[in-house]
Length: 104
Image 1 (cartoon, one colour):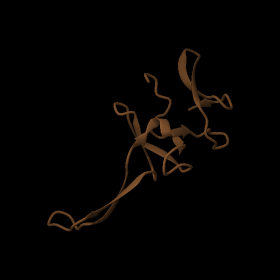
Image 2: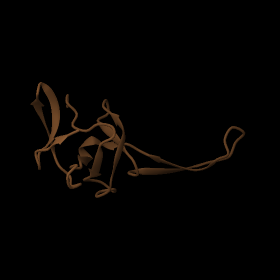
Image 3: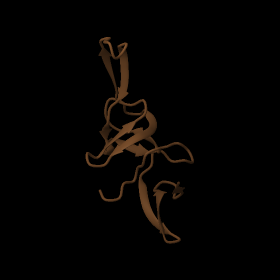
């Protein structure tokens, strides 16, 4: 996977797993592990004891999911789409396979 089709800031929908159907923004892309962190998806709850350094409490963090389990949302109608690459005016751009529009 040399050319990644999804980037930080993209809106994606989860297509497999316990959070299937949920959508959110990509917060982080872990290329070496082929994983992404999506806002509001795969949330882990951790209970921390209070200590001298921190007050403690309940922390909620998003955990990473595999990149193959998410699909980019089309900007026109917010439906999942596959992503292709095209060269337009000498620049390599991402293109929606379903509608053919250029993804910014």
